[in-house]
Image (cartoon, rainbow, N blue to C red; front, side, top):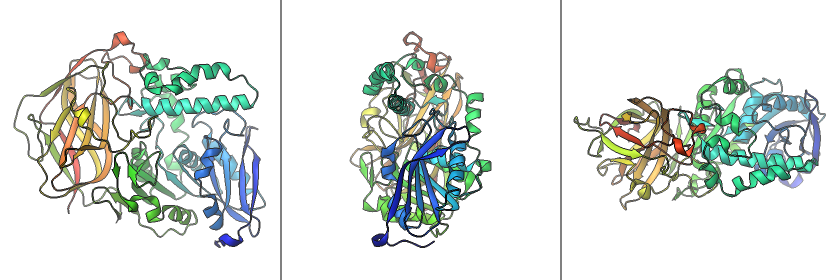
Length: 532
C-alpha cells in the first residue's frame, strides 16, 4: 500500500453521507479520501458519542498511510436515524456499513476497524458477524462481556461507571430527540439533577430508582448472568471472529480484564501501558508520573496500529510497561511463563509474608453500608477525573473497617507481573456481604499508593472466597513494602451490599444491615513474581 506524501495530500470529505441499514434505517457519517489515486482500503470507526469523538481519530495519518476513512455515528446518535440501544445493533449495523463501503467506487473492497472502549466493541461485534470485506481490527480498552467486567464485577454492580456512562448516553439521546423536533424538556428535567450531582445520585436507595436513564432498570434488574445478558453476549461471539485483532490496554483502565480476556480468546499483539481510560497514552496516572517514555508516542503506538491494520506489523507479540522500573519490555506471551506464583499470607498480627502464618484468632471489623469505604483511586471511570489510578491510601487505611497486612521493608526489588488474586477465608454475621481487596505499594516516605483492587459478592456466612484483582506489572522497589487492604466496600465504584441477602438494587435505607466480619490468618494473596 503506497504511503501518500503529506505535502501532496488533497482530501475529499463528504459529511453526513447516508448509509442505509438492512432494516431501512439510515445511518450517517463523514467520508474522507484522497482525491487522487485509488481505489483505497478503508478505515471504519463507529461511535455513539457524537462528533467530538472523531477528533481523537488519526484521520490524517490514516489517509497518509493510504486509507480512506469513514467516521460513522451509531444509530440514534449524531446525524444517524433510529433508536440507540446499547450494544444491541452494533454487530448488524457494522456489518451493513462494511458492505456499503465495499460497494463504493473509491473502495478496493478491504475494510479495517479501530476504536477505543465502546468504539472497539463496535469493531469486535462487527467482526463477529464475519463480514466478507473486514480484514483487521484494533481494539483498545474494551470489555469482553457485557455482564462480567462491564456492569458487574465479582457479582457487585459497577455503580459509578454505569451511572456516569448511562447518564451521558441518556443526555445524548435527549439531544438527538430535540434535534428531531421532539420535546426533550421532561426528560431533561429528570436527568439534569442526576448529571449535576452524581455522588448524590449514587446514594439513591433503592439503586434501581435512580431516574432518567432508559436502560437502568434492565441493568440493575439482572444482577445474575441470565437470559438478558446471554442475548447481548450473542452479539459478541469470540468464536466467530476470524480476522486478526490487536489489543491495547491500560494497567489502570476499568476494562483491563476485558482486554486481557479478548487477547486470550482471540490472540494477536498485546500492548499494556500505565494508562487510565480517560488518558490513554499519557505519561502519568493518578498521583504518579511514570516519565516521558511511558507515553504511547514513545513506542510509536499510533504508527504501529496503522501498520497492523495494513498487515505490516513487525512489533513484539506482547509489549508491557513495567511500573516501578518505568520501562517498556517486550515479551513472547501473556501471562509470562517465567513468573512464579507466590503466596503471601495474611498473618493475624497484620504481617504480610511468604511464610505460612501460625494459627491464631481472626482479625475482625464492622462494616456499616451507611458509611461505606470511599473509592480512592483504581481502574475507574467516575465524574472526578482526578480520582483514578494510583492514589495515596493513608486516609482510607485509618478507617476501622479496613484491615491492612504489610511486609517488612523489602531487601531487594520484587517484580509482580501477571494475574493477581486474593484467597480469603472469612466469615460474616450478615446474610450476604462483599469482600474487597487492594494491593498497595508503600513508599519509604509513608505514601501508600494503590496498584490494583477487586471485589467479590457472597451469600454465604463463611467460606473461602476468591477476589480477582485482574493483573499488573509493578516492581516494588527495595525499601518499599507490599501491603494488602481487606474491607467490604468500595463506593461508589461498586454498589453497597445491604447485607440482607436480597438483590442489592432493591434495598431501601431501612434494609441496610451492619455486618460483623472476620478474616482468618490462613488467607493469602497470590503474586506472580518474576525472577530479577
